[in-house]
Length: 405
Image (cartoon, rainbow, N blue to C red; front, top):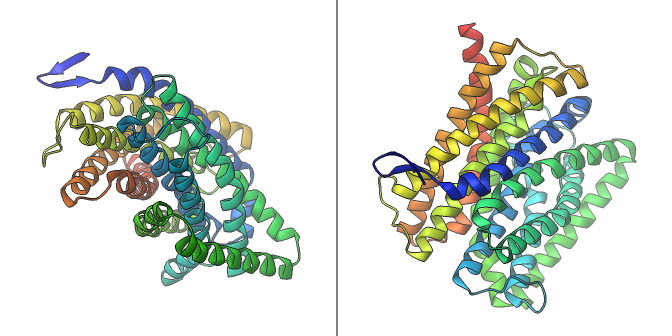
């Protein structure tokens, strides 16, 4: 353990387990950025698609991050076995999670259009956005299930703490899978008859409604309780994430269009959520196990974990700046001077890590104080807020550095 001052120290388990995972996740976050840069024209051809991106990506991270956090807590407490076969507890989690994902995917376009039109943003037809949202939800959701269950169960069986490794991998996987799948779905929607788009969207929506009714009437009580306990928080989370999309939509032309910073949007949003999710998961597990009590002022676990995660984030953001410049050259977008990139990434790392750690701690604190399940509260609210904070920090740092230089 590396002591710094009094009880403040660097957490060795985070350095050992989370740094490599976060590094891999950060580098992988450049892939969806590359897709954004390469397929930027679809953001123009489908008005409102950029507004839809953060809540859609965030929904994957929220849904499967919460799933992994719930599974991690149950594994720590010994109330669930780390195996797929004959595991009714795991089956309840899977059914409730998939149904919630698809139902919320159908609400996303409506929420985005209602909020966006208040400030005058332009949108494609509702049926087009609904088709894109449902297609991305179904395809990426199936892939995310495999990743979430695999990383959580395997890491626990290997003796690793799932709280340290699942969140960053899930957050990055959500970005990597969802953004290209959304853009491909947009391509399909633009290249098939509008009537096919409309009938497909309405047909899938009908199946989702039927599935919701059957779940509430016929499935196990445990499945219903998971759905009822997580749905309000998840709905709140997508509304919050939509404001990130609104911010990006309003900032696209003046600050992001045709620049390397558009490529870094997924990384800014994803890394903040991953860092905060690690802290939130650690605090939740520590609280359940009675290892450290959450107090109004951040406890030792919170302070030391936040410090460690800030140092990791600083290194990662500098690497992301370099990676973004390389991808910028490959995609042909404009690249600002090195000093501009350096200051933007340092400022972004500090803002994102500070705000995400603070939010994670106090959401966990409030959850325990109010008797709510932090596994259902911390990650959905945190990652949604970090979409707004990540996008806002990027735009703010671009503006601030522009004024300084």
